[in-house]
Picture 1 (tube, rainbow, N blue to C red):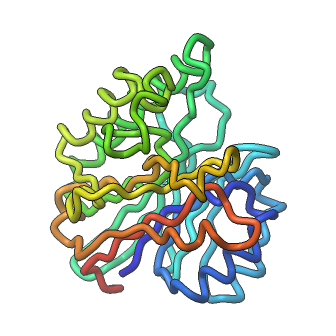
Picture 2 (picture 1 turned 180 degrees about the vertical axis):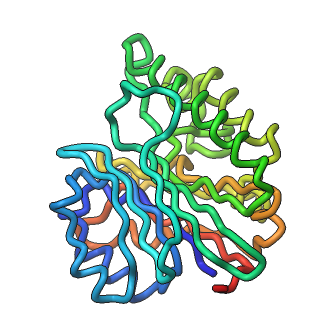
Length: 262
C-alpha cells in the first residue's frame, strides 16, 4: 500500500493539482493538511469520482485535515485528545481493515509556533505533548499506526538548507526537536530516515526563489509504530510536484508498506 502525507495549502486553490496527482501517483491512503475549508466546502465530488473515500475535519480559512482512502474506513476520530478547549482542526484518525488486523492512520497538522515569544509557541509545545500522550496510548494496542503529517518540525541540521538560518525559528528550537524525539524514544520510526541519510526536503517557501535555489526544509513526516515499521518497504519524497503550476509549498511524503486489504 502507498500511504502519503501532503500539506495541500488550500484545498480549493489546489484541487486541480490534487486530482492530477491522484491520477499520476495512485496512492491508497492520503493524509492532507491545511485544507483552509469547512467540511461542507470540501470538493469531495472530484475526489470521490476518482474512487476515494473522503473524511475531513475542516475549519474556515485555516487549518483543516483530511484522509482520502481507497478502502472505506471502519472508524474515524476527529480531534486530538487532551485539551477540550482547543477548537483548531488539526487531527483526524482513521482505522482500516488490512490483512492481519487493523491499520491506524492519523493526519496531523502541528502548529507552526512562530513567533516563539508569543502564545503560539506554548500552544505548539502543548500540542506536541498531547500527541506524545496519544501515541503512547495507541501503542498499547500493538497495531500498525502511522502518524502522518506536517509536523512543523525540522528534526536535524541536515533537514534544512542552512541550520544557522533556522536556529531561532519555532520549527528548529531545542524544545521543539526534543518533543519530536520523544516519539522516537517511544519506539516510533521516521520512515524516510529508516531508508536514507541523504538530504531530502518537503517544503520550499514561495519567497526569494527558495525552490529554484533548493533552500528547503524537511517538516513533513511519517512516524511509524513498530508494527508499521516492520511493514515499511520504502520511503521517498515526490519533489517534482513543487514545480507544477500553482503548487503547494509542500510536496508529498510517501511510504510504501506491505499491507493488503482484508
